[in-house]
Length: 296
Picture 1: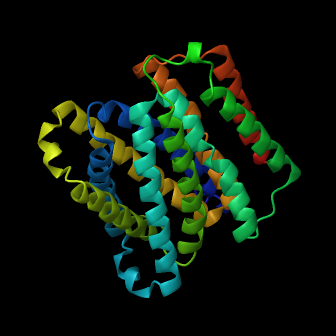
Picture 2 (picture 1 turned 180 degrees about the horizontal axis):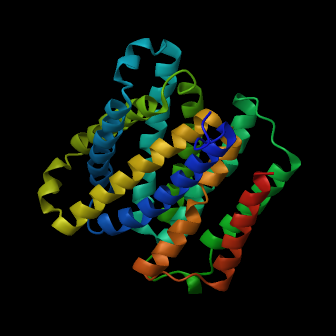
């Protein structure tokens, strides 16, 4: 190994941090892009960008020939993971349309809690006492950030955003576990591209079924640019995330990835002028501390 290379542990950690940075940026770009745009249509459009980006990376890495060697088991789990991802995206973008980023994102990122449970049950990973303590802290912090007093909520927000955000978290947790199984025997870039193809089929299937394709011409240029940028950020986040999953445990990679909430909160404050109350800020600190505890 040359002096400039990373150890296996360092590598998955760097990729996990990169995944968090791009995922946090994606949430804010998406919130700006879907203003006045149907959430299902926005999901389908940005998936096109993610798909192009994902397959481009496959050809750059020279992994396209490996598709013939994928086992039936890996393919099934990649397809299931892609389906869970599509469901998570559809719910997440609907939640973003209905609620503030600073409220939706914490609930979505609580998928970490379910991921640890699923990894324990299905992947035989053994969480430590510190990890369970971190799970409890994240749960408490999420409640403080999302379930604010009515006086702290911005006007016009109903409660429907919470249902969609919770569903997004459930499907995201399933995505991580299914994806871990699916990419064990293949290149992570190729796995990402295959999963994205499944998401694309699912997203556009819903758009066509609901007769929303004609709404594309009503999208203004600004929204199109931000939807495309959010797709690029998602593609970069996915590539980092699945590369991290190949080298690290799900129960360690996912908590780091979900620290994207910090990036999201910072950018939502700068670009969307969303403010955190003292209660929500205390919740954010709990989420950060919980994540740090989970890494012990």
